[in-house]
Image 1 (spheres, each protein chain N blue to C red):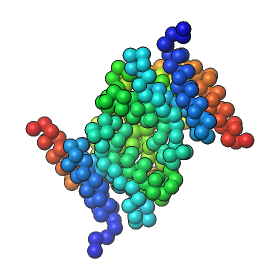
Image 2: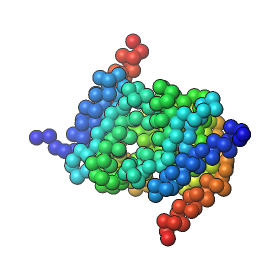
Image 3: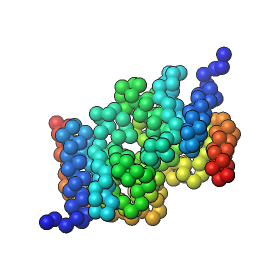
Image 4: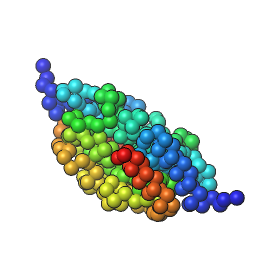
Amino acid sequence: MEPFNDNYFMKQALIEADIAFQEGEIPIGAIIVSEGHIIGKGHNRTECLNDVTAHAEMQAITAAAETLGGKYLNNCTLYVTVEPCSMCAGALGWSQISKVVYGTGDNKRGFTNISPKALHPKTEITAGVLEEQCKEMMDHFFKTKRG
Amino acid sequence: MEPFNDNYFMKQALIEADIAFQEGEIPIGAIIVSEGHIIGKGHNRTECLNDVTAHAEMQAITAAAETLGGKYLNNCTLYVTVEPCSMCAGALGWSQISKVVYGTGDNKRGFTNISPKALHPKTEITAGVLEEQCKEMMDHFFKTKRG
């Protein structure tokens, strides 16, 4: 049986990213885990909802808060295939989430460049989990789009 | 007849903030204007929705995109009673909104301190419109809460 580690949970985020890909969306997926259980999932839906706020992380945060019945995500970990942007890092900051794990970086829009102080100061960050797979999914999408 | 200027539209944002106040929420309101028409409104709903993403600006962005039938808010202006946070500034950045007008600043969580690069570089910013009224509403709320 596969252990419930960072790779396992990032694979679940990649499954979410693939749903976005199939829907013609930029393929980014996110899940939120509490005590070994997935309590929220999301994938990018900005095109189908015509809404710039519909990033994978935002959907996952809303879903996790719904599951918990409370808006704070202390003791939770977010797994997301691509480095969060300022908006998502700001939302994660408000949620007081304990840990953020991402796959591939985003030099242009990622929070580590644009908004390094957006997360809560106590939030742990791990980068590069299944980085190649997360990056390949993005590259494949943009290659397809550009014909 | 009152002219349709920044003060007029900020008053409409204050009406939204007052709705939040009446609902026991931190009283922040926002509206989005396109060609002199209000195309989206929002007030803070983080408590009633149990959702950290439910800021006034986010609600207004989603509503405006719904009205327009498209996710980009070029040629639109956001009026918000309090300086946007990183999350909201990031969302406004993605929306490519033309102008952001806010009432009172937020030294602790406002984007100008935390995420000055989150907005689109072409977005104009105007601060301090009806600043006293916007600040008073916040002060009144926190005074009431702290008994």
